[in-house]
Image 1 (cartoon, helix red, strand yellow):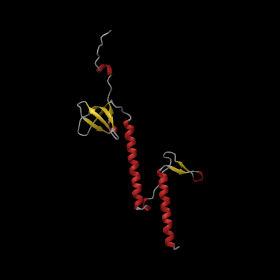
Image 2 (cartoon, rainbow, N blue to C red):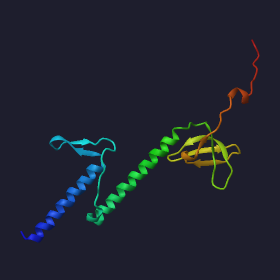
Image 3 (tube, rainbow, N blue to C red):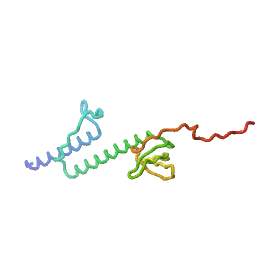
Image 4 (cartoon, rainbow, N blue to C red):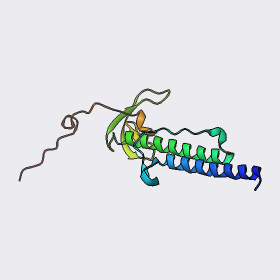
Length: 150
């Protein structure tokens, strides 16, 4: 085997091994005793990637993984914010160029909640932009209807 072919083969193997290391690191797995893979402790290690050595296809794959991870983190953050509110709860928010709007949550969407305002407008609002309003005692606003005694 010629020296150049040998070097080419070694580079291919190094790229494959590096790709496998990236996949293992992205999954949060570290090698343990006897080569057994174990989940890594949360945020206990950092992964250094030399992007200058990656091929175009590997860079595209890495980009797709980074974008997917960022979308996942954003969705998780929106979902956590959404759980702070309940359907039927009175909320407030301030849209750009408008005064503060007060309404009631009527529906959870994937990344937003639907709010119906006091004047009947529907708004889809990111839960991070919502604020809770001061709740009024229910007895003070609800009408009381007297029922005849038997």
